[in-house]
Image 1 (cartoon, rainbow, N blue to C red):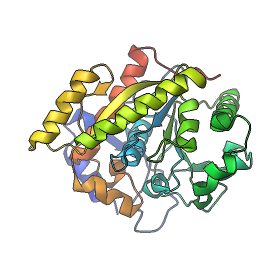
Image 2 (spheres, rainbow, N blue to C red):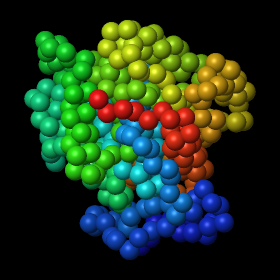
Image 3 (cartoon, rainbow, N blue to C red):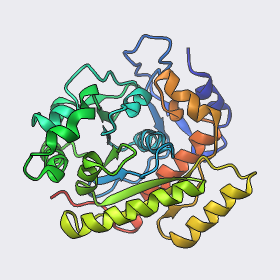
Length: 320
């Protein structure tokens, strides 16, 4: 049975932003709870960057939509014909849940960071997408920061593992277009590893004032990382999440962000939407759960803007 969300998207074919096509290739997942049948892709492909772009999704404050933004933007980019890898660096493993990944099936990011297992041995393909993959966060990842304390160059372990993997993929002629790293809601060693491995930081900001305090702390940390570990890291993208246009508070926060971050902000607010919250309970992103919902349309717009900015601004990340 084709998901209801997909049928809705076909009825709305006049909307170019949701112009979807589904191939005849079927998923190997037989569970009715998955509801992901076939390969999801857009008829209008997104532009391919000339080099792999690595995004770290971070914010000091929890509950601002980091994981939700990471997996839905990744899914939208993959639907646009791009090769995308999601690295789940949050011990809670919520990105794995949304992507339908079994966290215990293969070694995870704990083994990559602590046991020096090659990143390639952890990669799992996401059902329903032609080129979306995930490196899972297994349960042991919660103890990784303690295990890494005595390591030499402990802040750069992820950078070395990731760039070795990207070099291997490039040598095989199968280069990734995007890597999206989902961070825990803290500025600990896991987040520092993610910020050291990237040039671009994507910051989801919930439309409440506490979230603005989170970005202030993140900017202070970025300043320190610039000096000591990664002089190229910068906030390139800001996304407004859980936006409710009916409230004055949400509009005030949005105006503040527009004023202070006019270049970084993608001014396509992600609305508060039940479909976005429901999707993970079916081990899906909202992009496959209900492709015609306001949340899916908003995330697709954000992903397309990210892809266009990468081409227009020449901000692709070098693989060192």
